[in-house]
Length: 504
Image 1: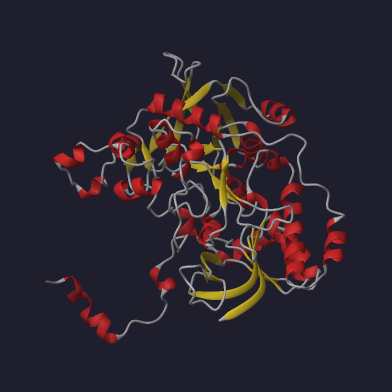
Image 2: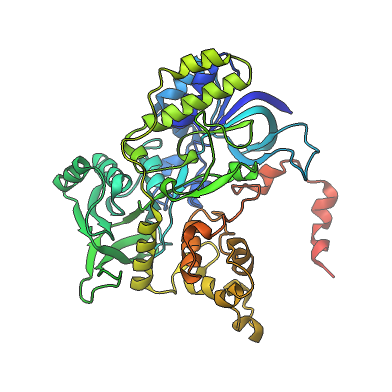
């Protein structure tokens, strides 16, 4: 088994900064990033919501590798500093000894590429795994052309492979406006930016530029449905909403578009942190459950550090990459000090040239806006829309705790059960709801539905969203083919006799 002094997961702004800072301090650093991602995974909307708006060129892994490297100058800087950069490598698990497990030699990560999987151990770990898109369902959101802002950003920046021609962006704020600007800069016509708020939020210069580029801004509006054919979305129906988030009769507007980009919000990627039992606290201003950390980006687990969106995302980070970069640098310095590569005095000296990562304004809570979006979408589209498209669980199925429809299983006892009856015994828990309905257990592993499920459960149970527990994670935290998880050749006896397993 490989053993590494310091592993950094994620080669974005924060991860590369952390790796470079630690390497300059004399630490042997291994930097891992899953890009370029295989076309098959992208087709499953893993790890981001790509929405099938992907050029065929992505099938050429060599071309994609060139583009990923060319789009990230910090990778070359990291290699120049002596960092062992491993691209196209997935982290599917994280393990360490706890009170209930003492068999490991030390903390370990499960890694894989397209061919095989393996395990490495580490002394220190920096998680800079980024964030993922907030999913909000509407009629047609499971069609090709519905995608997330992070998915669009990756396709436009690292991969140069977005096939969209005309886009509607859901959500303003810096996230939505910047996504729309990037699309315009790359020749994609932005037909509309839509927000449930009564005014467009975000950077005023971005807003003005978008309007000059032909984008129309629709405030107090929501998406009623996206319509199209087998190959994807062709139009989007918007509807005005009143102060109660109810659709205004006769206010529908049909917008021709092949893409709907959800830019309502982002949630920190905390899978690995959860597996390692790092303390996670609900912080609405940081996108939901985020890790507790100190000023040096140290988590509650003394060998684990965090940086960038994985430490918590807010809208100010969209236009100021220095926030994530400074967090990465702090984590790199702290990891180097904890490994004994530098002493405390040098760590403080290195930190002195890092400007404060605090933003001028305190990040605002986001779940009030997210709840407004969800309520408007439910009022416009009803409860029959898939909240979890992977497992075909509708909003109504979720609230009625119905078993997966493909089981075709019904009973009188089951028909009397719903979320209200469940609440008579215990507080609402997404894990229990997941077991009863299979919501969040599909191939995207809940990446598209987790936040929406929690918001629905909170509203139906009259609970504050902060009271809804985190739906837990289990390894593997990304889907992998069985041939990758177990790449060894089958024995002849297994080939000959495997069908006997299924015979009485």
